[in-house]
Length: 309
Image (cartoon, rainbow, N blue to C red; front, side, top):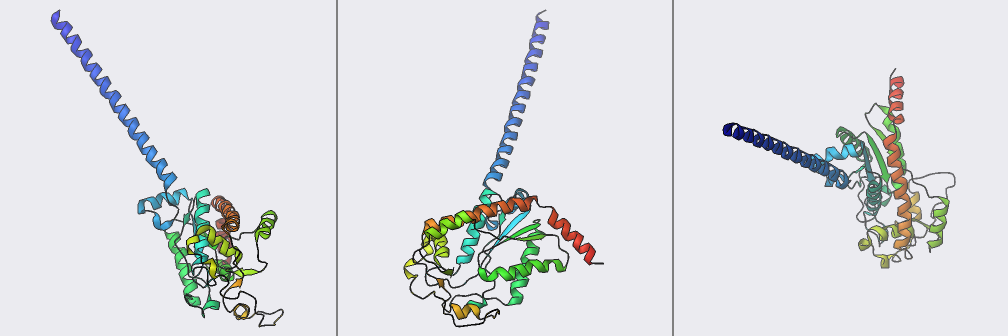
C-alpha cells in the first residue's frame, strides 16, 4: 500500500513537472513571438526614408513598406545671389521629399545635383555636366533603382532650368520598353494659399534666389543663409533683348547676368514654412496616388506591344 502511494505521488509530480515545463515553453514562445512582432513593428515605424541611411537588410523592408516607390529630389549646383548656398535647389527638393515621406512613406534618393544649368556657367561654383552626361546619368540611375526592386520613380524638381529637360526625359521613356514608370511631381498653389503668400511678400518680382526661395531656405537651413548679402547685387531684369514671340538660349543671361532674379532682403522663415507646407502635403498625396496606380504600367505595356508591331 505504501509502495502504491509513493508511485502515485511520483506520477502526480511528474505530470505537474511536464505541465509546468509546457507552460514555461508556451510562455517563452509567446514572449519570443511578441518580441519579434515588436521588432518588426519598430522597424516599420523607425526605418529611415533616406536611401543612404538604410542598412542593406533594412533596404528590403523599405522597398516593401514604400510599395516600390522612390523619390529622386533633383536640383543643380549654381549661384543663388550672394546670400544663398550653391546647393539651394537640392536642399529644398530633398527636404520637401523627406518631410512628405514622413506623411506617406517612400524611399528618398540621395542628393542629386546633375541637372541643366548651362546658363550659369559664368558664375563661380556652378557644376554644368554635358547634355549626354545629364541624360545618361539619369537613365542609369533609374535603371539601378529599378534593379533594386523599385518600379515607381517620382522626380521632385527644385530647379526651374530642369523643367523642360525632365519633361523631355520622361517622354523619351516611351522609346523602348522598361520595367518601371516615371512620374514628375508638378505642384501648384491654391488660390487661398497664394493670397496668404502675396500678403506676406514684401517684394513684387522674383524668379531666382528671390524672397520666396530665400524664405524657404530660412525655414529649412537658416544656418546657411546670409540674408545681409541679399542686396549686394542687383536682381532686376536688365531687359537687354527684344525678341517677341521667339526663344533663344541666352534669354536668361540677357535678363539676369548676376544669376539673381528678385529682391530677397524681406525673406522670412514664416513665409518659407507656408510655401513648403503646401508642397509637402501635395507630394504626400502624390506618393499615395502613385502607390495605388496600376494603370500607368498597364498602359505602357499595351503601348509597347502595339508600337513594336
